[in-house]
Image (cartoon, rainbow over all chains, first blue to last red; front, top):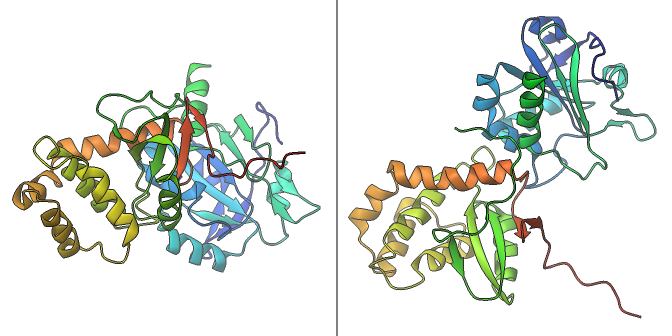
Length: 154
Length: 167
């Protein structure tokens, strides 16, 4: 995974509506990248659903949440609608995994991203990284708030 | 909403909803969640004191907030209601997930011998909303990412897992 202190690699990906989204769009704002393996992967164990429940609190702390997987924009759209998510899902679809690989989050042997969180500060520098030890180990929303506390204190 | 950074599962308190005797098993559950319904049926027969904590995930189960508020409104009448009204209500919500519209809730409330008018007021009240929110926030802080989430002595637990084969 990318190390804290590194300049966050720039990217431009399509969101669920087929619109281009670039990291530079969020200059001056903190960004939390949420890498996850696949849309529609589990029932009732939904990391993104839980993040949605506390999205208001995350955004009140000045953070833009962005989900990233290698699924297509169309799949993201259906998944987002199903879960009622209100934050963007970005499609690292073509070239497959290129953006995730730049962050060290792409599992080349199986063609999906890992489960990880990357906090980028207002100046575009990675400040905090969490990688789940296994794909089944889902990072709770509490980790996002831990990261913000740590970064604000540091 | 208060701060949501990591914190241990709060110890069981006097105003937690508990049923049974034995080792305490804290269950963060979503009343609209089919997985919770299945697991609830299984843990009911465990030799343990089950502690129910609210964890509605509204974007997955849009009816859940209303069901949790309803359950907490039932609890608010327990001082004057037949013993066990809260858990009887929860049992019935999990057992019959297809009948959870308001008329079905009213039917359950009347069957439990509760005050329907008071139920209707309480389920929309701030104290009830705060009580549900308190459990939900404690679950978030403890890292709950799915339901049901079970804890024993503050640690994740899976009492329904088969023990390893002997010999």
